[in-house]
Image (cartoon, rainbow, N blue to C red; front, side, top):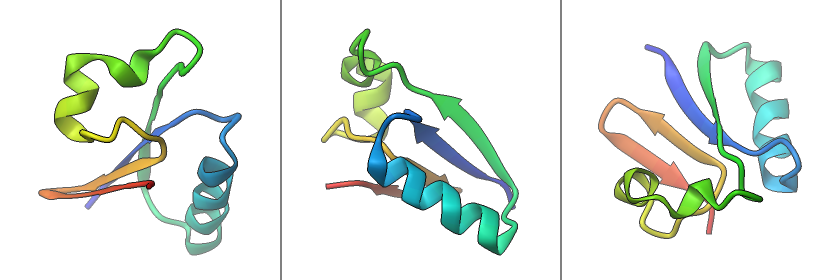
Length: 67
């Protein structure tokens, strides 16, 4: 099981998630989302997270997004 985390390093909620991931030593694949270039507003990202927020964590069919 490898989690996928869509993130932007300057986001405080992302940093919190990164601390938990490091503490639990979870295997995670990271995908950087450049919010300055509005990459969170692309059709592809909106299919994953309609609220287009980061962090967004994917575990198989389960998707968890920040609100």
